[in-house]
Image 1: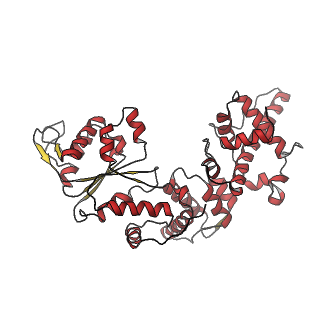
Image 2: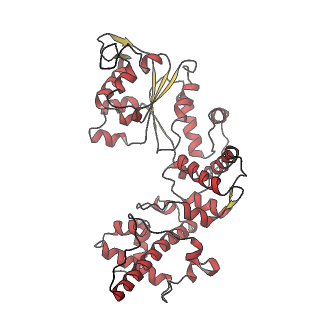
Image 3: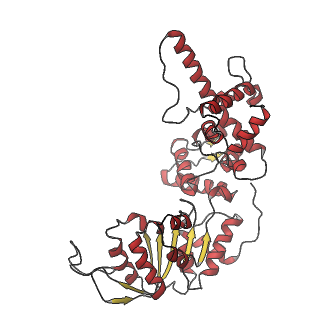
Length: 398
């Protein structure tokens, strides 16, 4: 996926430099622009995005570019505070209000008066705390735990979540009125896979950082390896990419990492959307198609090994455990699968069957095991449902 380069506004460049944000993809630039644009408007903001996508940068941008930048900024991870103490942490408590309350204490809403509070993982708030938060948003008033005196606060709230709050509302886990108060303005942070060439920029930055951290020569990635990384879904987003690069930096200092090494190290996504460029409705991409075949070949080799083990077991009158382990298939280096010439069409199973024959047999066997359920079969084979339908048609499978 290629990005259409446009001129980046000066304010966006300033924000990126100030908060060390790496990337030039249009979707990221638009999100930063939106944060800067809403910063002077004193309304609550909801930041949404997948875990690890970098949502924590946007409340800082809003605070820094707004009128409250000289006041306090407090970030609160709502999911990390026990339910029994969250009200005390946010709103404070009076002496003797509960066991262990040996003195009065200010909460975050009192401490940050005039400033900004960032409520990360806001969906984790208990319903009782959500009611208190709604009162703050509507009237600026709150009560300390154990107090009957109403206090006022002038605060801007920026919340973030990786949860679909509308679904949480439907399930009764999140107040509908609070959702609409928090989402007056919404900023959607893009996931890493949709940021295109930013993956390469971030990879080089992380490689350089780890080189300095561990006092070693920096690693690099071949062009083919980088193409494979751009095709991967990255469910853990930037956080996952950073950990991925660190693993190579620790044990491969100074080396260029090859495509097979990247493919071997990336965990296979067993979901129905296991092949991002195809499953997400993007234009057809032959590079992505090759990734599909490689992942399918991993599954096929494991299936063949299992069948061979069962045949040997039956002949010997003994039982051999299948090659599946905890629901995941054994992985093999790509070179072992492709064989001589690095061509998938040269690949045979070792039994005289072509790859096409083995592929058809594996699909038929998987469909039979799953009683014709194509979604489960696709998950088992490690391919997308769309790819499975196409192969069923190509192979004339009834």
